[in-house]
Length: 281
Image (cartoon, rainbow, N blue to C red):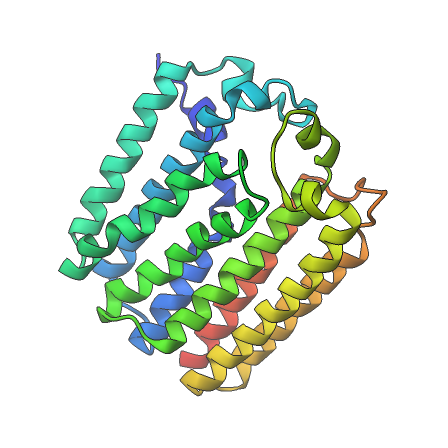
């Protein structure tokens, strides 16, 4: 019998909050208002399929490490709630959902699909050889607003590149902070991360700079598009959340880096979406 709950656990469904709001925000900007239901529906399904495939693939590739990591004992694959074979089938299904959804959008979306797929296929393997793995994840997540924009407008513009860069830096830095608590585990098992390259202390400094540039890029995107005040209020809220997140984490104390800490970063994407929407009501 198909264990739906286990498969939802395997793809960390609530974590869609990191990608989907930025995709909707991007569609609002591209349409200069509310996009069509057709575009919104198929973009949503495409992001669900792509992100789900990425998470399921990542868990498969990392399985041998995850079962040794105490923090991951609750993962469905580690617990045995789903099998490797079942996980592989799910990856295929999610990729089909992605392909079918993208095929319903502008033809250019299908042509550019490989550009979106490559980062999330490559990401799980980057931990084996580079400390830049967090940025690869950032680029993978940034494909959500990138694809959403192209689905609505059919082009790639300067403001889109700036927006995607901001999202990539935001999620890449956030992932590096979250992963810094695994510095000793990663060193022991020969894995690469920003923390293994620069230490946890160095990582927290670098990620503060990355988040600063992320906020600057969000501001630049708003200026280029000539957005009104509400958008910049959203950027301000995002900056405040990131400031708080950095304040509660210390190089020698990651007790605050919990699931609550992880999900709190979703406030950034939700605030940006809500206040961008307010620009068009």
